[in-house]
Image (cartoon, rainbow, N blue to C red; front, side, top):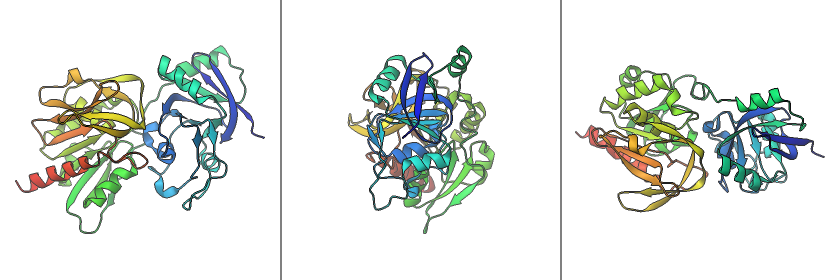
Length: 361
């Protein structure tokens, strides 16, 4: 029989469930994702650094654990909350179950919680800090520690430790991928389009990147408050002035905007899931996208050389930016989504065309 486990929110609300995964106490920022599939992408997405992830879909783990679907080498989330986890997964690629995986990675999980009620609390009050415990006793000091929890140094703890290179056969373009906590599938998609990829750590300078003579620069996704990365933002500003085509995704989208003088804001509970509508303003067409972010670019703060290209279909927040004076654009959602819709994968083709146009003069 599973041990009792408790999820305690910073407002004092307590949810009783059962333990799975690693049995250890853990404090983090509670966020929810509405994705119905792609839980392996969620578990291994570095953008969840420092967070306790709540799955709204009631059954998780039905196709087990498949290592080739991972989006990073190691998961960085602080905890995992589900209504029910599948103890007998069925898939011809299955290599284990979620419980064993969480145990091996030292990540505590709680199941048997009313995830619908918990999600409604986050939607009403916004993102809340929380703690996974194995007793419902909580001192005032411990509650204050939960309330004061902050995610810090997120990019520093998820970026690549050193330069890596991934070269496909018959490569036609050289792309430097600035890794702020990049998902593996960004590289896979670029490789499939003939791009020789050089992955560089987030602290790499503009001068070092330009010395590699790239045809294009990709700014990856990643976790945390974008405005905290002041040194990175300055290097991106220099890269934007170089004339080398730039494509930013998620955190990369936010950092590029900040480098041009725009502002970002923390959302009440963010956009996380594989069913987020993004409206393309040029045509009015709405795409269903995969998203995972808690911050957004403030559209009204954009400089004269930038225009909004996509908006969120639910709250009208900025989902994409085109820069009119340089070969650069970015989107808040994930066009490379592996577990989610791939409706916007054509944006990678746009990036390829920008590199071709620059080569051909």
